[in-house]
Image (tube, rainbow, N blue to C red; front, side, top):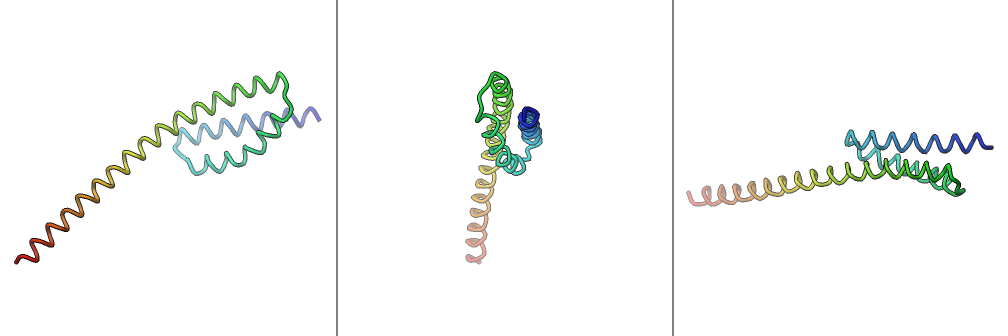
Length: 106
């Protein structure tokens, strides 16, 4: 039974590291899917507290912190891109309004 726990711990750490790799590659949808898979394993591993779990917990928290930093940066980029799209839409609407005035006035 101890082997199963070690395997669960290793699986949890491996999943966490894979999630970090996905975050570094901006593969947010796959990361979210993996997080759902990891959640049940996370609760299984940490349902029994022990000194080995404390070290594992610190490592996973450090990985998750890196993921959150990358996610915040990506969110900022998405917000910037969304603003550019809104601005382009406004410019397009203004162009169409001017085009309608010019076309209607001739």
